[in-house]
Length: 211
Image 1 (tube, helix red, strand yellow):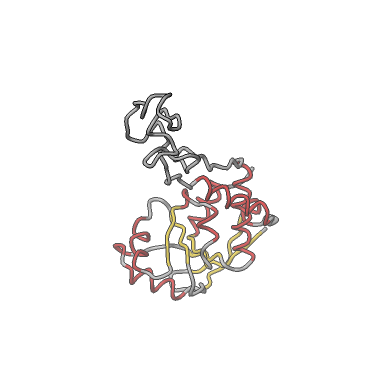
Image 2 (tube, helix red, strand yellow):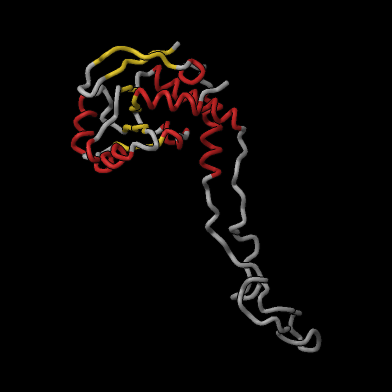
């Protein structure tokens, strides 16, 4: 059973809380984590580059000149790829599909591996409550300074209804927030520290616990 230290609003230790082993204490398999990252980034990729083929470029469909008798090569359309202004052959198209399939069970397992790694490295910081009165940045910043977090990137996981913390974190350097129900492996891998409330851990466990 994994455990983490619990801190109060003053940054003082007030005890420990137990974490669900199926989500916070699993064997880490780097290959599966890598596969999950590739799948997420590939599925988010959009095909922007697009070239027109001979059926899409502007131009007349009339035959440039008659088939025989001119001494010139045969041509049937000015929109042919060999003409200037004609269609493009084998160019990039916006109907390309970069999606990679990854089973839901494998995706959740990879997420549990990253969470387990955060716990093992002491990068998951649990607090009794996450509050920011009226969405004030000063209040949230003061709390984070009292916690044993890295000076590098910090991710705060918040309940979807906790908009005050999300608002307060906007002007804090190297601090981002993410709703617990939108948790994903790429955003989870980036920060050096992960901050979450006690209630947030319960919500996270209910949403992502593996049976």
